[in-house]
Image (cartoon, rainbow, N blue to C red; front, side, top):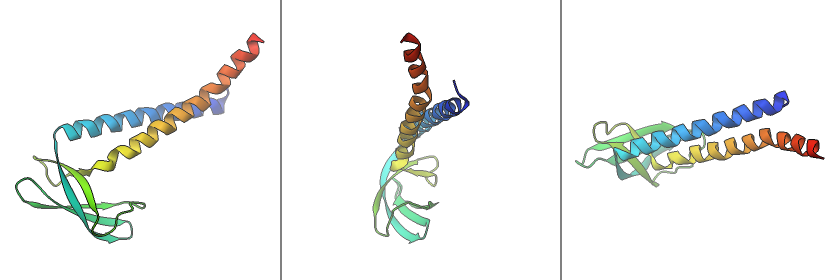
Length: 125
């Protein structure tokens, strides 16, 4: 196996493992979390704030920064928060990143393993 193929294979395995970890972490958080809807109240460049209310009516603000968030003021988003720490919330689209890691990891693994199958086929012929 060539060095480049080994590197791609290792990167694929790492991406797949990270995707699995993020999915498990997100699922564990959501098991103990409460769902609510929030409203994007502030957007400036990469920064945005989301206002949401907990079950007891307390107003919370989630402040985030992300280059390509795609939110606009007034957008309604899904928010998950824990009752014991309502200020630490997550957006429901957290699973998108882990799906991308799964796909990337699987693709890299296939790229890393494909030359092995070609060599085995050549040996048989």
